[in-house]
Image (cartoon, rainbow, N blue to C red; front, side):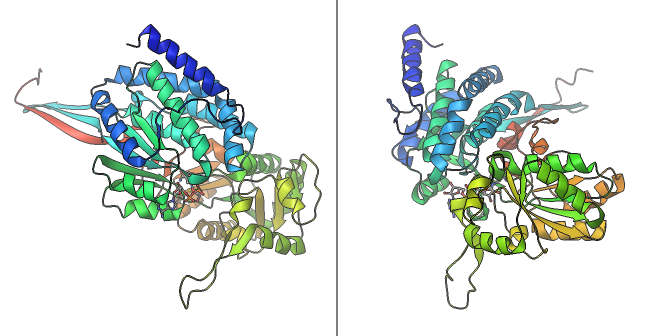
Length: 475
Ligand code: NAD
């Protein structure tokens, strides 16, 4: 139970925290769960876990309900802070993302007990906590990932340490503070979710290697997933994608065009599930492009594509002799508005331009690279088989997400079997794959490499068996 004095202290702190309308006005109080060093964060989380490990599902669910409430209440603040902190994304879409997390992340109802009763007694199979989980979170969906992970991991009975992306450290600290305020309001222990104010590779290594951290979760690019999977601990990897979308000639083309632009431009293409390249049958390509243009797309020509390549891609320096330089994304342009990107190549587009489209060859860099920008290359194909073959190659074996616009069930089956992605959306924007305007729960940690898929509380539990021999088999 929280006593009156404690409640009024919390309310005072919350009000002080709400004062930070923008990042320039620094928070006027120390944020809860945010520490100067990872050692302090680890010690505090361990202390909290000693209490929290005895919490039953009802107590955990009470905490989760408070997190949902605060996330709804502060969605707008967090959306603004996230854009200010990271310089990426779209405030309105980020507000929607926070409400989605609050509404559709699963809680303790996801945990199932199995009971096997028979001649030799009763065996229970339970989803138990791991203990303390170390989670690395991305710059692209910083607060949504922290809140979604916190709900799932606390539902599973775990404590959580976060090492957020350094480029999103302020919004990430805000999200950790919000979760802690919710925990306290529900009478839970302080610091069951903890982080550091200045996350670095060093704080990440400390977290990964601390013996009290029993499970690791990486949401990010290939580097961080590989690092955690080589740690020797149980790890969940939610890595990069490059989702292709295929459009065949049975599709409702005006709807397909709108859905693709809506999905591709959601939060300026930051979500890992968002449409990144299109393969369209030649006989409907013109119509598709026509309707994309009606839905806020701006078409650039071949010469402008070349110019844009020099803006949004950069050459890496070879690390050792013999290495060839590679073209990778210029992070300065990730998640930026289409209008601002167009201005870089001298195009003064209208305010309502949402997406840059271009026709390219399959081998063109925009098709092959996960840009995370509202830039959508379109490749014309002669047959559905060719579209599927190219989509599989462009997805690069990430097994992340793929999308299709078609009314042909055989095509749906053929593409799904060939591409093997965790998420496969048909006839909707990509965000339907995480439950937005669609059936199913949400997550911001889609674990393709390690196979947990659309993560939920059960993903963060360990299975334990409890056997009672020759008793309680009551029939
Ligand atoms: P990123 O890989 O740059 O960073 C992720 C986090 O890992 C950050 O905290 C970063 O500091 C840290 N990091 C990176 N390399 C590391 C290493 N070797 N050791 C320790 N820590 C390391 O990712 P980002 O730019 O923030 O996010 C974009 C990427 O994440 C995209 O590839 C996107 O597809 C992917 N992503 C995947 C999912 C998913 O659910 N599968 C969700 C969001 C983002």
